[in-house]
Length: 191
Ligand SMILES: CC(C)(COP(=O)(O)OP(=O)(O)OC[C@H]1O[C@@H](n2cnc3c(N)ncnc32)[C@H](O)[C@@H]1OP(=O)(O)O)[C@@H](O)C(=O)NCCC(=O)NCCS
Image (cartoon, rainbow, N blue to C red; front, top):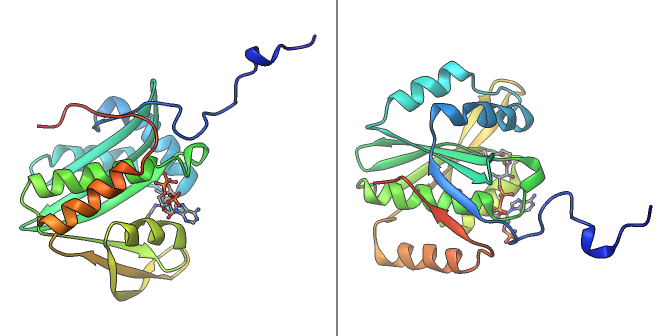
């Protein structure tokens, strides 16, 4: 049967045609989180590890990105004094390059600054140039290498830092990034 063109729906949304809702990660999101976790990481975190991270609410921030009912990405932060350490960030492969990761990181940076962070740090595989590109855009710069940090393949980690994230220049950088994100982003449930 012929299908009229207006009946044809894309299998997945085009960039910017979906609302993304960012909310604090809750236990009810973990099934969706783990589904992505198992797709993108060779050594996925377990349900128990996520549960214990969520229990540490005074020093952790975990956020999920939802499109409709579906978790399409998530990210986390550990706060130690005025350092904020990005513990994880991942996006459903079907949603890559739609600025979901950017929106998650914008949210994390905002939460880090709101909680008194002055610098952000993270580790990233030396081969993960996609993530490194995103981090550089956010002002992260390489600061060193942790040799054989990733035990699945003995890969080195690049350690990156973004300094003075509480100051106006960095806030302007974040505003420029946010202005370049197509689509609607709704942030709910954070203090
Ligand atoms: C890294 C990751 C979270 C990025 O999520 P995303 O939603 O696809 O990223 P965005 O669309 O926000 O991209 C932001 C920028 O990062 C860079 N980037 C992201 N993916 C890229 C790719 N595959 N190739 C080159 N650059 C890429 C680009 O500069 C991009 O900006 P642009 O699309 O405007 O050019 C996602 O690729 C992912 O989940 N990877 C697997 C898990 C992982 O590696 N996490 C990081 C661990 S440290």
